[in-house]
Length: 129
Image 1 (cartoon, rainbow, N blue to C red):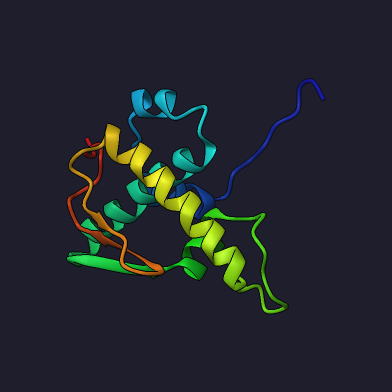
Image 2: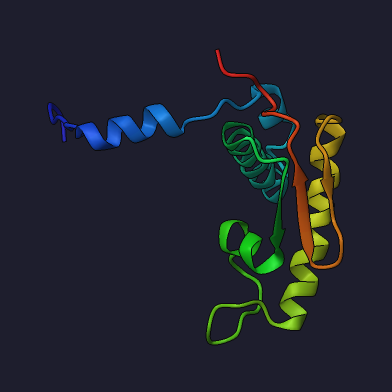
């Protein structure tokens, strides 16, 4: 459709302006062949930016919460929660993706106690300007 226009409302513009966070293009390029690691990098960058804004020291997320953000093809029950097998597969793939991200982002402080990710506030990967 040539010549068309799109008008964005003030609410959408404000959301884009206030909820954006910077990503490191070099890391995106390094992770481009690893979709789970790329998704995890973007998710962790967003969460760390939010932790810094909120002044919280850490956030703990269980696999069902992470699955809602990052997973789509793992076995779930009728309520949308991961089945035991789905949780095992998701956790394995998520920890593998985390190792790739940590190679590129050594300052990242994430612990993986059984069935959870504990993300400690280290600030975002790329500071805001």
